[in-house]
Image (tube, rainbow, N blue to C red; front, side, top):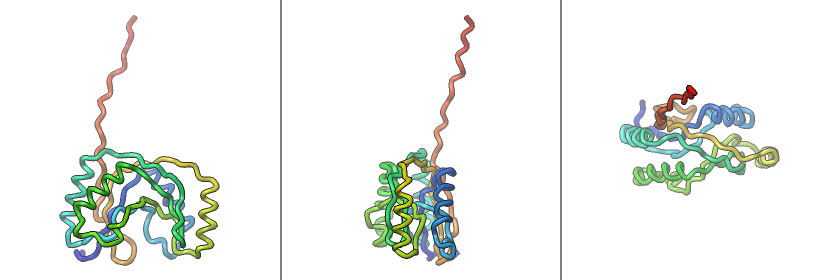
Length: 183
């Protein structure tokens, strides 16, 4: 593997939510440009030469954090596409912690204010994007999704190559035995 290729870090969503966003992406994204599954990008360009440190950092964050909920708050125009906007204080904190840790490595795009979203259409004529935005907004009702982990990818100009998936810590909940009333 070429260690100088950039890395991308995404948030892993629960299966049901990912399937929903991915179906939307397959429906609305130009097929000849749809190389990757639906995703919520946390960092667009991390230095591949620092892979061991990046993996160590995300594993440390994932192993301590339980899954958390994100609100899907609406739809966002992208000019030549459409995305679902998401919000979560837990996500904002997670990203901020990692950004501080990797501050010296971040490119301008990853230094900007993070606006979490899942793109379901891109690379289309602006009029087509406006039409889809209007169509999706008409039937939109806010909903929630669950973040279940982090996914790290190599980017080499085409489809992404998965490096690692690190799930968030599931809490083991002890269940009390049922109370039996013997009269």
